[in-house]
Length: 250
Length: 250
Image 1 (cartoon, each protein chain N blue to C red):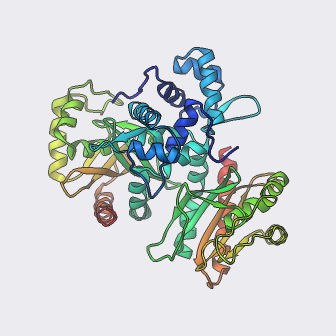
Image 2: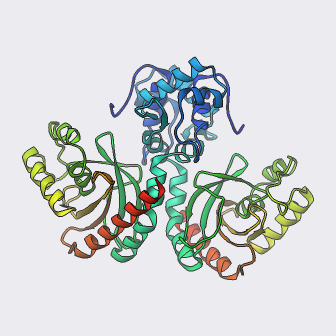
Image 3: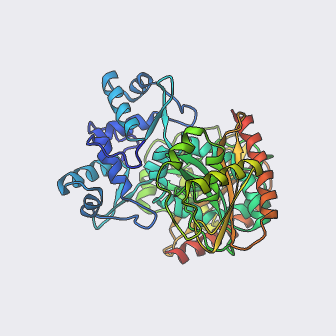
């Protein structure tokens, strides 16, 4: 599936409008939306008016619009993301209480790591991750475990594309990533120093299904040169808890 | 705004399709969706196909569909709900650690209490609330604080409608609810014994903005006859923390 399903269907246009909203761009005018979505101004105004009428966008006193709670409600109340996240939250809280650094949950979505949850300590360091944000599979510790414990077709698809460099430490040579994936499978965890942000090291473990495939990745973000032992122990315990919770649910 | 914006626009039909998905009905056939959305079968099939093509619904091997992660991602990454919820989560965790019962965050949405978050103790008792679920304002402790610290128009609108009875303890006489709201304003919290479920008592406090209006309600669900003192103390401290966090952010 394409990352930005465009198409000229009404639904496609509607998605293009919603895609113009980001964590740092939460309020826009219809004209700005039209420009960013590549839609004629009249079309953008009409789609925005429809979305406002349906309660999916909220319009403020100055005519600017933002994503409404109704959309969040419709998306959340029956979603898989919520089930995985609820199953994982108690275990994540224990990791966070012990490690006191950003603790994260990611799943595979459209060949990227999509972050469902992040618990942060007020004293924790830098972290680029946002809830509902994405990171490339080859660069993040979460992505590496999703890839290493994912299916063969996924690995081939990802490794035959251009591997984006985020920092000087991001592995971009497919052969290097392949060796890394073999190591992740052997060790049962991934350590990714500096490959997302120079100052941080990501540490991740998979949450496995009965077939040994990763359904999710649990991770913490440590300062670059911190010891990883305590975090790894906490993450492995948490992953087993989540695996049990998901098996009990299903 | 109506609860189910229908309308015959494409966006309206799309919302009607999404509204057929609930926490207990996460997978449906297009025919079931059409019946539940009140749409002709051919229309339902076309809207579902559009939504699948846009990545907002996922189709499984048997042709049944579920709400896709893409919709959750679009709804979540730029939403107000997420900002309030991230500001409240650390304080909610402290309440939950101390009280060890369901700890909840609700905001006002379309004249109901919409629950953004719930933290649950494995040993906590019954609780009807779901994340992205709603409860009537007059019946739930969260709703009572949102109403008591809400604007006058909201109160008149809610109190001049039929007040739905959920249990024998739900107040349905507008005069009784008015007295209750005055009490909630005086005390700074709401206690609602048995009005949502016979076996439980809800206890809620408002998170106030600078003008003294409720932006959210923090609540815990206790066994019906439990003492409320510890929960109230924990909730008041948490509300002040969240108020400070939201003020700092804005």
